[in-house]
Image 1 (cartoon, rainbow, N blue to C red):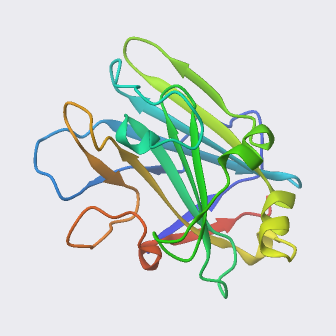
Image 2 (image 1 turned 180 degrees about the vertical axis):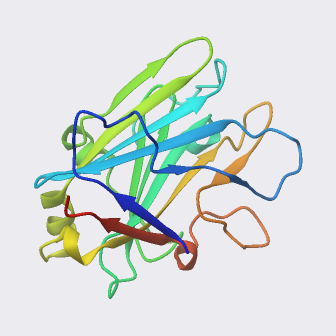
Length: 199
């Protein structure tokens, strides 16, 4: 079953992953970096952290709103309301630069990086063997985008990705398998469920 259970925020956040990027798709070049996804929430928002086992990787894009997915990047696509087809994409390169969009599909997305970057508390750390990227999604940001209150108890849908379209070794990894014929993470029918635990 395509479900991820999201615990309440605690001191153990960042130690045990809630999911792993295990489906590397479309290319058969053997490049499969280990990517762990850590999740937690509280009354104010959802906390997300990616742990990437990867040596120093390409970072050419150095501004928000740019094509960071062409660098070594991690991404979360989130659909907060089951009855609303629109979803939010949060895409980050190793340096922490953001591409954020909103809409029903790949085409015609509203570009929101400059509007919300300051609310996401983005943090990036890199060493010679790995890198981490963490950010927060305030629930009031989701409520404002959709015009209705987001309630964790109602759940959400999402997928998490690792990619690098124009790196020396291109790759496309996902937590939940995407069954498109060509590289495309904007297929929300393959999102899995986020289940927010009460305790």
